[in-house]
Image (cartoon, rainbow, N blue to C red; front, side, top):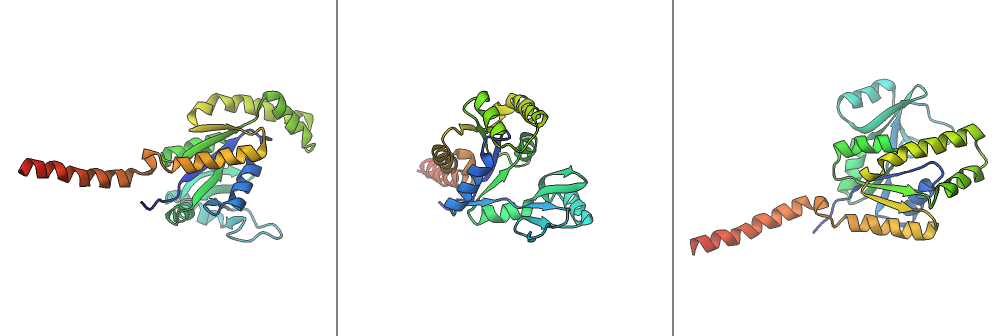
Length: 213
């Protein structure tokens, strides 16, 4: 049974370490690919088209919106950012599990268009640990830290909409558990609809043969 890649959504509170987890998965396992976003902002020094982003004009981006060519998109600081449908589907057709690291609102939009997407939310072992990690980064003001914690409280209301939650207490263990979850997801009925349908139709032939007998 040849399997197509699956679409994976990884979300998590700011400071929980989801970016590190995604980076480790992509570097360690060939089966994973990180989705490349499309944007209308100009490339920064050292950035290449098709590596960090697909850089396009505003007109091209809006053309993609009109043609349903984006899985999800948003406007931020005067520029568009979005996930190209063609790139994602191409990677999946090649058997790659493609990962989108996006926030909860974007995840719900993707789930509407791709019901078979696998949604995983990365959690801290406790609220106190999350606060400690945010403060440990030493890159944000006190107000920004409080804002992120308030946002985390709000996002926690939507966790039941995800397929899996995983706690990032020990990074190595969490990586192993996440990889295990994503491997197992390939064997759910919703990821094998075509194969099940084909097998069911073949089995029905036996019933028809019995009727003839």
